[in-house]
Amino acid sequence: MKTYYLIPLLFLSACSTTPKLVLRPQQPPTPNAEGVRYPEVLHAYHVGRYADPNDDLIMHEQHVVYRVEENTRWDFHPGPADRNLPAVPSRDAAFAPAPVNDSIMAEVNSQKAATAQIMTQARTLSAALAQFQTALQQTKTNLQETLILRATVTAMKQRLDALESAQGQQPSFSSSTTTNEPPNPFSP
Figure 1 (tube, rainbow, N blue to C red):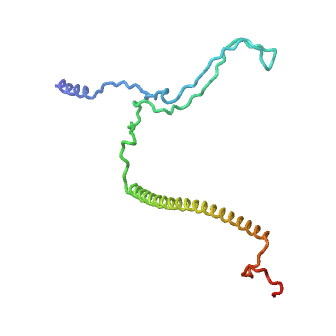
Figure 2 (cartoon, rainbow, N blue to C red):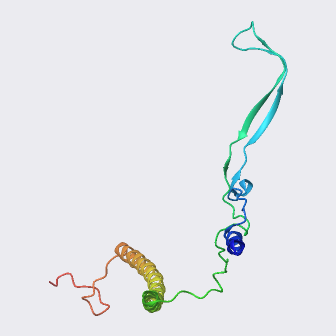
Figure 3 (cartoon, one colour):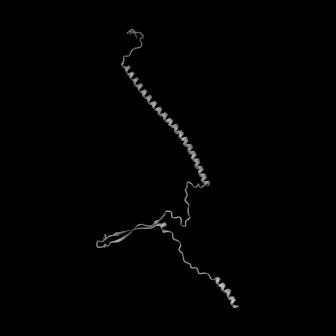
């Protein structure tokens, strides 16, 4: 009977063992360095034999000189879509509806009212400008007529002066006699 007690213990021990799991440490995926930063640019220069410029007693054998032409820098261009970043769909603003709330609607209405007021003032200004243009044209016409009248008055004044000077050179006649008889020398 002792053997029967051992059989359930075998089943219990079989159930209690767990399979061995092999855990291998995994490194998180590294981002693609090519998509994040530009690499540095190196350039190799082959230099021949030369004398040291600081000391004439030293000669350098030919060798290669490496120079960093451009340092690394960040890549600001948008990368591929497979990164673990939330995808932002690009949309054309012309086809997207405008966001609407009370403050935006109030601003739109105030802009509409301001535009209507400006349009009314523009019409009033253009009407005043048209009146000013007609008044200016009439003033120009009046100025031309005034110049013509001034020239005419000046010409008449010159003729009148010429007539008066011509009359001053002729002998004066007495108008007291009404007949053609010679004047009486004894009359007062």
